[in-house]
Length: 317
Ligand code: TXA
Ligand code: MG
Image 1 (spheres, rainbow, N blue to C red):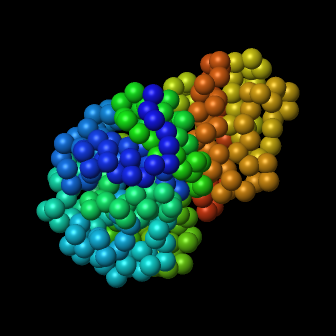
Image 2: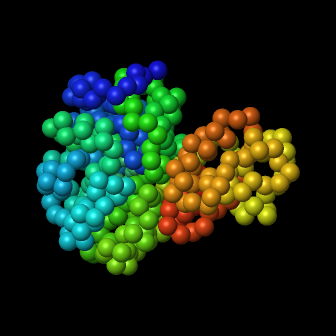
């Protein structure tokens, strides 16, 4: 098991030695290493068991520091940084050669963001390098939203987890790239499209693909529990009292023991639902259940990102 604590100096020491540290962000916990140190980056891929074609997000603490990593910031991107950073938004920008190709899987763009968590911002400010950090889960499994989630799965492989409590947002950042200058959503996430469009006008939503080398972040099967997982309207659920678990938006289903059910938000609040999503999925996955059934949530605001995660968890490839 890893040490879990709030010691920023200790986290910094491990990172300076090329080791990896679990870090809190407002979205999910990250598995962080020195983004400019190839051997640290390589160990991120190893610890996560992540294929090398799936590039990493680089975290920094100021827009000024970005100039060491990217060669251009389009006006629309700059506007977004001013409005939403620190926050759950990742931008794909043309990379400088200082960023190792390993980080970007050979792409000529690098994913960058300033996360909104006081401990991690303080850590980043104290470092003279940025942090590459994917979500701190084994590749393909549910992202971690508290330090115990990280410890349960990666605790044997990393020395330290910085304890920032539960992640407020609970779902990964929204990823935006600029295709011929037009803001394009590569991954739905913790910043709603509606908010982004209020700043830069209409955006394009890139279609999901499990095999599109242009969009390696869009592997379909992802965020998946170990148990068979199905997504459909509740009217189509099979009811099987002992053995099936249910992940529901705002209301229990009648006739099933409540211990087999999780309600994402009793008041129907999509922010609360996003916050609970991954922790509840893990809880159901840990129970002695043979299948998990989930219903989609309303497809507005964060509901679109929640439905995206549910769809990917249910996808077969
Ligand atoms: O909220 C988040 O974004 C969290 C926290 C820790 O910051 N991080 C996160 O990282 O979700 P990860 O590695 O689990 O997901 C990053 C996604 C991947 O699917 C990757 O393929 C995509 O970003 N990505 C990274 N660089 C890219 C690039 N240059 N072009 C397209 N997609 C990219
Ligand atoms: Mg991930």
